[in-house]
Length: 157
Image (cartoon, rainbow, N blue to C red; front, side):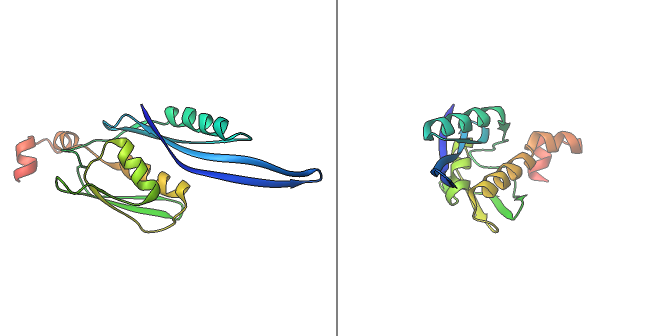
């Protein structure tokens, strides 16, 4: 499993005796072959926050249907004010996505995709919207089975 830290935030709380610092980390984990998960951890120490986030990410792993290194179809994802659009791309395009979305797609094993974040730029909402879009994806085999047709007929019409 590969892991990538997407965001690290230092939060300050002012008390009578001075300032208390805590850290919030967002981590994405995956195998690069269609499995991806994200997690968030908070602690007083950076390494502990990252460890908590990694543990949470391993618990929330989903499977993404991949088709020739890209996604099978266009998909919208939404979480709160975060809206994202994912489009399949031809071989050699690469991952055209920004920030937090790029981390999720790279770790998931998507090699060619066009993506656009249309709402919030907050990494929390962007990651959750991306995971939402990836969860909604359906594989060509599942669609062919649901329609009761062969794979050839699905692609050739």
